Image (cartoon, rainbow, N blue to C red):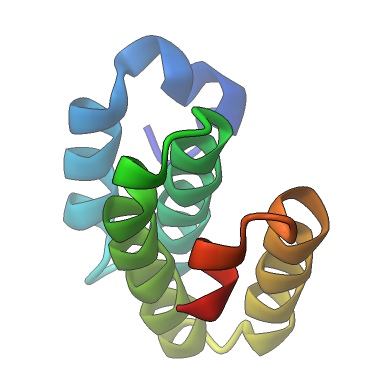
Length: 95
């Protein structure tokens, strides 16, 4: 499962993808971080501000996992991608 392409996670649905990321956090934090980041960005694609708190939680878990894996650059790239794609969402960017 850790080698699955991120696009394939959409087929699994958010709950199963989140459980997969949680299971990977301890031994494979880099893979977990990619999934949490994907979950956060895909939650924002829905356009509803109701999903911001869930997206924020996933961003926080992605950050923690990237830092644990020693991949600070990947974390910075995820933040930049979120700003580029969703920077107009002022309520989100304020958080």
